[in-house]
Image 1 (cartoon, rainbow, N blue to C red):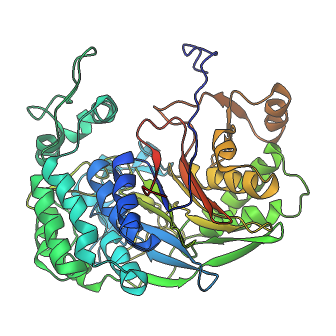
Image 2 (cartoon, rainbow, N blue to C red):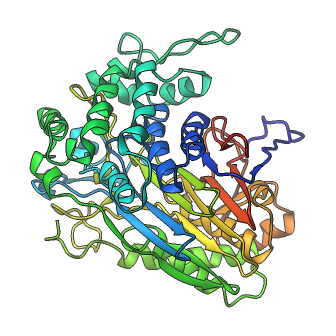
Length: 516
């Protein structure tokens, strides 16, 4: 328990309200880019595309051109939800024999797998999977976008040419990963001073330093000019694959050529007279659906009920989930609502913070470590294999309440995502909470590890009841490290919209289009 924080501290982050569209994102600058697209007459999908590329510049350790993820969208004219799947895949030339178990210990990062020798599945070029974010954004834009593609990518180009501002929070994140970043010369050159030191200013001064992202800007310009083909079958993909192979990875040009994103109907879960729409397939969506089905049988779910439902859902997921069709070839979330009532919930990730801690020299792209999603033990549903789809934890949703309210939610935070999304959805659907109230309520985390992490501000009787379900640890809600996932959401009630982000996130914010 973090007793060195004042117990009298009270942090509030008011929700943003508007008759116009709103973008809620983990970085305010990216949300501004999306809101400007809405002001220009863009659809929620247009704003999502622009926000996606912008957030990869201002949060380069969470997302970017090498990320994967999923989007759930609500089309007001159809009263229908769709899911766009652009998850990562293992390269087709990957050899599981190159990832032998270390023999003792557990993995040193997000997922509690047995340790692999030299952390080859976690760090370095051997951890890089085939990314999907550009293909996913292109597919959504092709089907539903209004504004020309280039106009949506160009704001990210401008941000990269300028370089992201290295403030105290970015300095903290870089410092916490400096040792790993220093092991790749290109990551060290991008993120560290003299290849060794985190870019921290003085504690009394204003830091005006910026990241040199000019090489990334040139790559984004190729994507703006050529579309997804720049990466999937184009020179950008060839250059990135060459860089990965030069560092010992197996990603190839052919992997890019074979990749495609998919759009399908979202999975519907009836709940309290409404519906929750989740991404199907290799996401956290089916796990959330199982937990919601259990809660639906309880008249008034408690925190103990959340814990039981999540524990059972995670047991099922870890025992059975994975890509069984082996022949078929640090996360961020943002949510969008436009003035017409279209919504998007978008989660995308490099997986670990800074992904593989490797940067592609010729493209300036920080690379994912998607291989970490696979269980390194053979013979499991989610065991590592070439060409296999990664089993992600991201869980974007769109919800319909019985009273007509609509909301789009999601979060970052690995396995912590599903529990946070479940509780926020329950607050909104079971208690008719406002978005602001829901985001300020305490939460718990149950992530399949046989324990509960509970917000220490919960009443003593609630903490005692949780202890009866599983061993419970009380934790404080802080901005670093995060004991719980980091959500962002929007809500529509009638023709009024609101947006909110995690109250402890120093960068996260909701931005409304101006003049509305």
